[in-house]
Amino acid sequence: MQFVDNDQINWWAISEQSRFVDSVPVFSIGKLDKKRIRSQLADQF
Image (cartoon, rainbow, N blue to C red; front, side, top):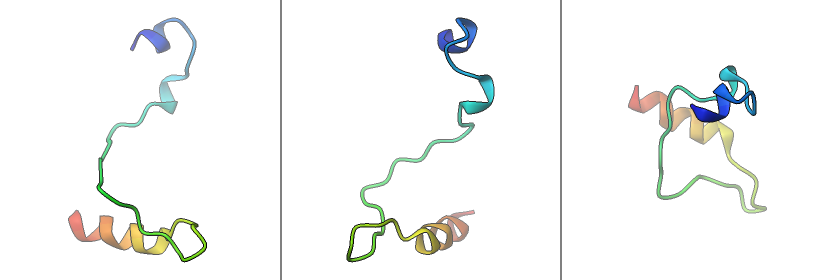
């Protein structure tokens, strides 16, 4: 939290949750497949 205390970053810019994954679904052109990401996250909660 030192960055918040030193006014280098706003408190609302810090995520409450983080998740590490092995791979992220992408389209053939390399863009993120947000619909698949959302559906995978919805299945986990």
